[in-house]
Length: 459
Ligand code: SF4
Ligand code: SF4
Image 1 (cartoon, rainbow, N blue to C red):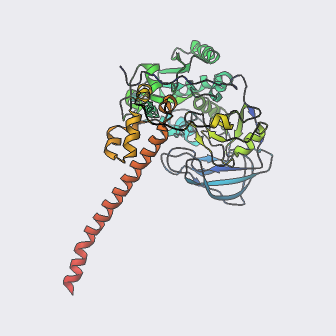
Image 2: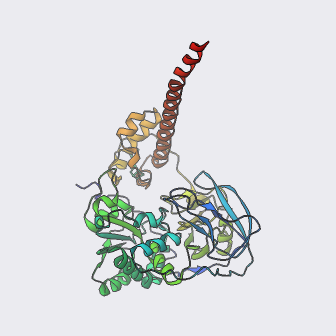
Image 3: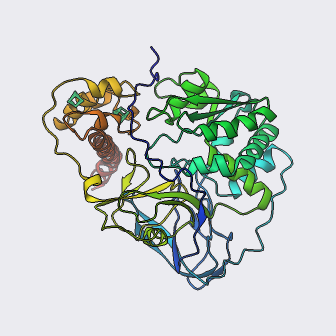
């Protein structure tokens, strides 16, 4: 049986906002734009306090090859550049812009000239695009494959398997032409021959819309997938749309595939048509504590408190606020936290919905093993962490855990298995760093030794 034949879990869909086209919210009084909204090096600020900016101005350049530039999402004045604690737990430099309320578009915003592979990739880089499904990997880096012949297929992720989230659903329904145009750009300039759009069966309207598109382009195929979480996980999706298995520790590229979120594909077309970089994001705002759940388009950097206020505020004080869905979402510590490029949902949960049952002893039922899409042994990994057994964690391949949360969801003893896997990875990271520091110290001491002996010999 394939590693990725998905057992997963059946979660309640709660796609309450699926029928709601996204509404653009007005700019808040100020936005806080992080320099790190992507995997890789943070962007380097190009502006200083007091500078005036317009929508679409580059305010920070890519800080390395794996990085992305950052653009102003409102027009106004740069108030400050300082560090903020983000949900990642890291302090990240952020540029605060006070909006003038005008949303004046920069003169620099004009459609890029795209004539070949190089100019297309340059445009992708300049657009500030990152994976909009949540991963945040710079799109330019993903598409800039050393050997273009290595890729024959782009898998377009329209699975949107997490409960509540419907922002990709709206992209497929409201921006189908842009998805079509994005595919054409990838076909024309990167020479990719096959596009497979994977969508869960609980979105029949999206499947129908994408099938219309496929009828006009023979390179496009739509695959309807069972509604099982985590159908949208990269390796699971590749297996179910192409039949290819990405071996442990390998990348989609190793099986000739690039995976792109449907909203990222639509954004590329929008950028090439308008030249407006990634300055706003469609997000689903939902959860039992939200008064008026809906899909909204917010300028990047908008504080969550402003997002919730636009959605009518709270029915009751939320017990938990999440960036993302209930399965993989990260708890937000402050409503001052901003919407970032790859935010696809924010959920505010009331006390009852947020309540976590108290864990009891593992009854060794094996359900977590049976439902893990990576065929890991979450219970065994949890025990290994408790006894700080690094060798067992490495042997059990905790590094392959994609933190989908199926194990925690299915566990009858409510064990916090996903949380423990996150802790286990952190434990191994810190242990490795300590060992490397010790080795470095030893090497430096060994280097210094002959010098000391020489000095002593001189005396
Ligand atoms: S599902 Fe829970 S109770 Fe069952 S083996 Fe895994 S950790 Fe133990
Ligand atoms: S061990 Fe990791 S990959 Fe497996 S079910 Fe749990 S969270 Fe998902």
